Length: 495
Image 1 (tube, rainbow, N blue to C red):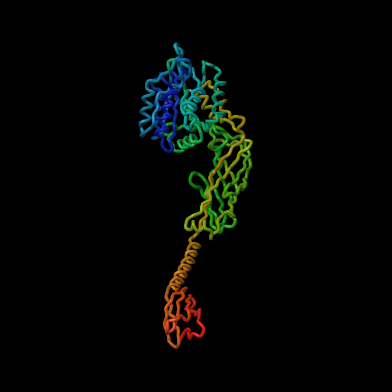
Image 2 (image 1 turned 90 degrees about the vertical axis):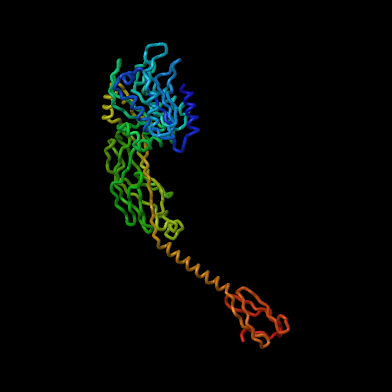
């Protein structure tokens, strides 16, 4: 059933998807360990799923909603409950609420025993079958108990799950939201619920970043997302705190948190001392130690940035530390004020896009104690925090800050060039008028004065009284000239 609805989902998406549309797959656990979330009449579990889907699935996006436990013969998992394309605000939440209304904990085939759980199986089915390996976001709502075949070795099962996260090439980004949700059922009780978001592909990662930045997830879940992947990029943030400007250069924070440098075209040594706030962007990890290096890449030039400190230690999330630096801008790459690029930017700015790259080497991460304690309270007896330990292969990371250099050119050169062009045009106009204006020539033929008119560049014949040609009058911009004068002819210019 899941495969059939997945096929229908992709046919729907192919026919109706718009620019920027994101496919979403919601996996909702309904195994035995979830019993209190279904049986407690005060459980906010189902309303949470409906509200989250309504917040993140936007008009034009495709959605598959499925329940999962562990697949057995005669009881496939995941089992699709809904496949749709969002067409208007509010419709998604009501459709999801309706599909979840009758959902209850599942039992094993031909048995009264409650179904077991396989988190990895559910995620792989969503990535490979529902999304078909294409970009999208998979949402996993679970009580965090991973116990296929009622296996009590939950640590080993969780390790398999996180191997899928860290080594799964299709999964580009993963964040988790541990939520406090105390519920009491007939058989079990629980304190918390976990919501995972798996971004599949680069497009899925950009879509998830957009949802996090827009606050749409925060409308429903106010907890800070815990990052599981990636741990080797965008691990820190650089926020400019103080800038000592060089003559002719002013630095400021640009749109999107980047750095902008406004440069005068005659600035000779555009360099500045910048004091940053270095922030850890990898909640819930503390960067216990790392060595730092930085460079700027701009206009084809790769320059080292001098840092006041080459090491960082015990950098916890939410506790920035100051970091001084000195950077130079590529003077040689700034267009001359008489260049076509500069003249084309007169009155505005010529923009050189670039970036600042910060590299962390020999990076050591440690799960924060506060997060360990929170997880222990929400999921007592669950060894999950130990599984949050980053892979040993993650020993370096990079952070990129957009840099925009804006060279401001005045109107002077353009006005001067305009004056020169105007003068040339006027001269050309005068020359054209002079060239096209007929000129008067006085010619005496056999003591007879004649008046002739001719334009520059023309030649006219001159005849005597008998009608015989005795010469030709050639007219130029500089005057008249007699040519082809017949021997013995009495012809002269003037009186």
